[in-house]
Length: 394
Image (cartoon, rainbow, N blue to C red):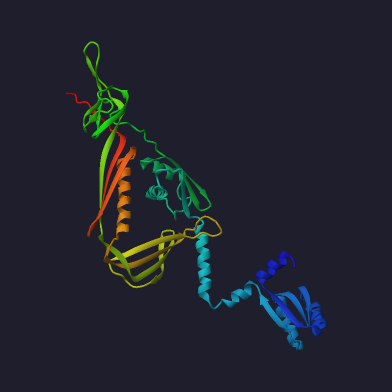
């Protein structure tokens, strides 16, 4: 059977008529005399089977009824399928609505994809486009894409260049962010270098200015380390911005206190689940389970975009929202849990304060009482204590 015949039978309907083999000669004679065409004939045991179109099957069945021959017909194809669901008008109406939506949505933006961004997020770029009236659901061709891009560039403080191109129903947005020159505050202002904290000098790296301290010398916070004031051979003074690094051995003390008693949230078991269909900017509630909950609730929301066969995401997504009611109860940390939290906080404090320092010695002491876990830490390290301070005109 050719492909064209198969397509024709699928659209117009087809049938398979079977009758006992003893009637085969009469059945074929009826087909010849009444110009009933069949596409395939098959002898199956004690029956003969004819593959035939829907109209010819009805005509042949009528002739066999007149002669009293036994037969059986199996119908197929689109007309039979539609006939099964003709009383279920809701399905047919839904299919028509879906077809119309897909047809009409072909001229609207289904998705916006951003590239070229580094500090800006894709959501931030979409928000700037939305302020100019361009978002998912906008009609394609209603406005020139260059005009949209230029309107964004006129008001944006972070985007230097933008290009918008369509591929199907997806808008591909390419951007280049503005580059802001990094300036050093007071780069030409005369300044001294002083100690940012107490310590014992290890060594100095003077790039500009005059060192006023020596190695193994003890200094206090605020002491002058490198001077930006110099005197020439004529006894005249001039000022400049002193530059350099001064490494010293410094002492640091950290203290962490973790309360053992705390309040925690426990789910009470009451849950409310809701699903919402989002089509472009329209929201339709499609499912809800559970009643109204109290004010003490935890909400988890997730949005899943629909995509078929790896094609760009459709402008349809399912928003799932689960709300669980909780109650606040008293709890107590054991020594192991409190210790883990305390050491975690200590590491964060050390990283924040001594990120560029070289650790020389660390001493840790812990203590636990009925109410808290105490962690004491003393650190000796080598670090740059140079701090630039402008020279007063006085």
